[in-house]
Image (cartoon, rainbow, N blue to C red; front, top):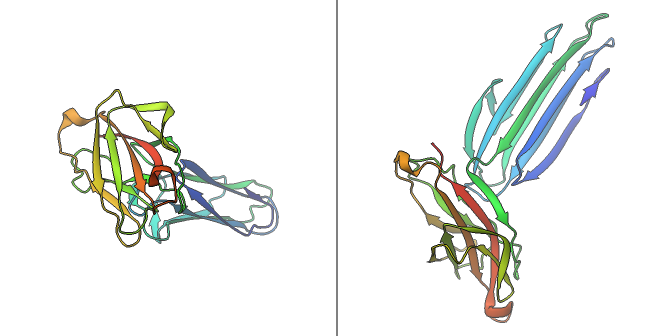
Length: 247
């Protein structure tokens, strides 16, 4: 939030959390007030994220504003789906209002981001590498043939087992030292997935274009193979996620 003669530039980083970025600029002094706020949204490469632009109201004297998402301009009211690129998704919001005499001039707008249809339901059990993160490639919308379950920070070329089930737990149970967040009383399909040279995991899960799938919930977690002697049972665990198929 900025006011008076002017404002500088702010930068931040957000990771896998729905959030709101708001820029409010007002000018009641003898100079133009302006602000630029940028955020880099980090997460697993390919994760589906929805960006919504709101506001842009200017009163009583028009000001200017701009919203750039990954360098592309977006208008107020825009709702756009992205997949996180390597290095993160850059979001920049700028606003400016001129001197307006004795009037109060204001630009107020916001950018929010979320992961539609995907939510974390349990945390990871770290191993010898940074914690593995389970997420999805894209938004789980029916008809999304490129949808899949992703994982990061696995041992290169070693792999993991993906647990894909129909139930999740509020309190995990232990598998060795790994906290497991999948409900063993509901069907679980264990699937071995090799990791690539960068330690990334991907299990393709194309979603048919069938209305009956809308609202279906799936739960997923990676049990990641570790180097011998690194962890009890030589495994660590990712967070777990809940995936809800969208219209």
